[in-house]
Length: 295
Image (cartoon, rainbow, N blue to C red; front, top):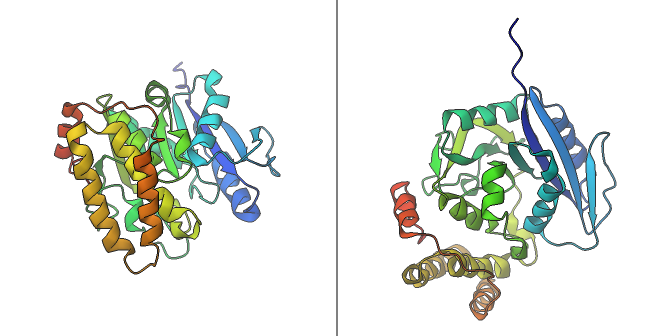
């Protein structure tokens, strides 16, 4: 008799601040409904004790809000002893629309063995729209086109745990914004790639990131930090100059350019953390993949 193949193992990390009760319950139901995978799930209360923890789900309570990337690190660490093959980082207002979503994402790793992470196509559940910022490449017009990508939309992404641990996880001190650029570049520097699966849909409401009060300051500060941490020295001024021009164009009518430039100056003053510049080989590989690390 043939023996059934063992189920693939996945750790799932979800953060909560107890501010989305209905959405959070729906998100968790969609995770726990996944089939043909062996899941271990942790809910991290970021500055709160989680007020909803389904049966069989682990929880961790942080005394203060440490920010999204550090909360994800804590969740992944809490499940590390299980030795799962993958880690799914999952926003608490997202939904996996079918019970085979995770198994389909895993199948993408089997088809693309060099991939360190797989990013599904994110769509707003009400409109079906996929925002350009959710498509992790420069040419985002055709959101259903799959392919190699050099960055990620951090809210819903499946990562090989061995690669995640090898590069040291998320940059926890970023608090919010651009942590996926930092993590992606480190994964690429292992000789790996990212893969965007445009035919695998997940749901997430199309909210505006600028709703967060520190948005303009943190996006500017963290751009500087990414550059100072990960780029070869000659590319740092090129990257920063490019993002000054892009940000002036994007935010010129928002009334927040002054805040943006104060955040940029904050990044220049320090706090970036450990510097481990990517190799020039990685620069070339990123460029060949369609996004040189200057934009």
